Length: 435
Image (cartoon, rainbow, N blue to C red; front, side):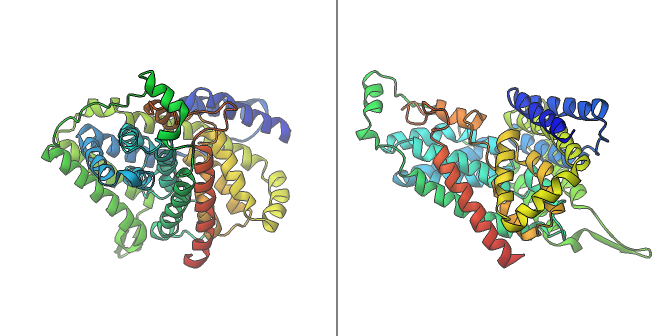
């Protein structure tokens, strides 16, 4: 029966991946129904708390976009990129990383990808280089962002309940190191534009135009205020996660500690409310924005897929735990490989964390190792059909960013593998030193 259930779970993941985030959630729900009604498994509790936290964060980020704050950040990013054009392969991923770090979603990369492509071409740099590692950096930063769905999911699962500050102290430098390694690899991709015969042929045919739309104009004070408010919210989340005494009440009955999940939910919804009132953010526009839509899809995906994975693992823990425990005890790094493979299948860092990290805890892996392996959940660059990868390919009119003849030999593969390996290696070392 174990193998039948495993086939059902994998089939739902593969089918769901063809339909995107919403499809993963739907197929995950169908998988739970099959495991329960047809195969006799007891369904686990759905990940309601994680979903509510993600919904609150996405509401704040969507309000920021509706208030014009995201456009203001894009303008700042363009100025930073144009200051050092020859070094764009190293500057662009840093900009993409910072955007995701504070926004909590890698989908904000859409706003800066055309700018990166244009600046690279104007500077004579092969756009494939900065575009590929910028997409990877926007994914790596999700596992370093204090408000990302993946970090929020990890926070409540680690043994010993390490603080958010400790997790960030490991993950931020680890992912930055990984992105640096990936940038070095990306800087060696392909030939320079002047020596690339394919580009020269496209240029001669008039197919290499990379013009982007003109800027919308100077940012309003309301757009700037929305950015300030959002950053205040992020800082408060980090402070409350790092110092539990800030969310502790003492009375005659003793002390009561506000849960981090509730703290995040209250803070992010409050920041969204303040932005809506003071920055005149159009709430209807927010609901139609790319950030909000992507976040809602993430919530639905986690709802179905994480629920199905948790149901499967809990009902088959005895059969899974023994063999895996022996294997992971001898070679703990293999759990990082499992996280990487699962993220390829799920197309979601948060869903991967919610589905597989509880298994790592049950196998006895320490919090330091699980935190160090956290960046391994950034594997969905492996198959080049994720939206940010496809967007980067389309924004590069020089044709240098592409999917190869054999599909997997695409522009993002080597930088992605290098960045992930570098992040996990650095994370494991830092985890032992810090935690």
